[in-house]
Length: 69
Image 1: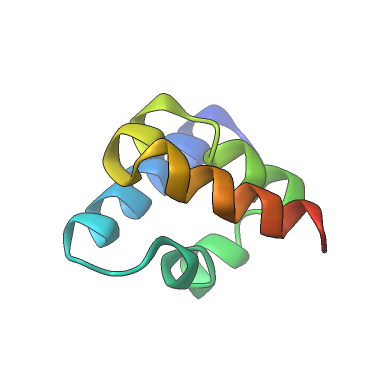
Image 2: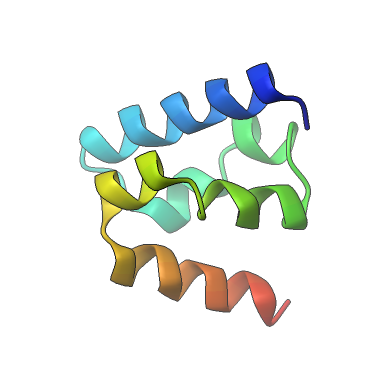
């Protein structure tokens, strides 16, 4: 996953979460799954912009779920 693609996905996640969609649902959107594998999706959850948008507890919870897959 390249820098520009990752940045675009971060913007997408932040925008969708700001529209009151649950993070877990957003991470299952085709826009994300078509561009990111499990490792890349987990890396998105480590980005400070995403953590600020959703909260550390929400990001950590989803990271844990991805790690168990």
